[in-house]
Image (tube, rainbow, N blue to C red; front, side, top):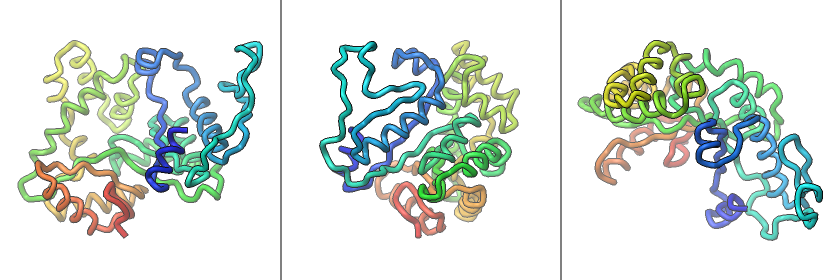
Length: 283
């Protein structure tokens, strides 16, 4: 209902982002078991699309049953449908996913897939098989999968490479502290990228409370490979690398102190002709 409402007030410009998160957040923040994240995501997507089509909702899945059966509630539940008429009967869904089964699900069912820290030269070895498996089962009516990496830092100039350092603390937080040992999906990703020793060292330092040390351990090549920070010609080469690796929409975070500077950066990257940017289509 919230998605349908936001789609209405935005005149059909809303995209619903979904993600399975991890056990620390789901159990520690939401208070529900972290079981079957892929299966639950699949059913949520199916339920949302039925709601937006204004079907009288009846759903019997492995994880969700709607209406709730009488023996599990008051017995007053009945099939309902959305009162309002959404602008679109299929609001685009983008699934944030890193693990192979979740990435496969995104490629099969969602309009878009959002990975974090997309490294063009390493992406195929990490996600290629899962994307291929999901696309093989994809309904053609969904159209091509929109590959929308999470925000890449953007700065263009001859003296901007120092801005890469701004990403250290955030990457250290995710690699080191966003999950327990053995259940940190961001740590797993960096290890798959070839930084296994560094990922382990960052996590050890971060969980031990040595956060500055953890940040210092983030590889410079990881910061560089997942960002768009450098001279114009170099950024243009990186945009081309993202495109060649399958990225279709590029989210960017302009690293600038004023609105005018941020707009200028967006205009520059728009001219590099990627299919889309956070500011809209690039043509």
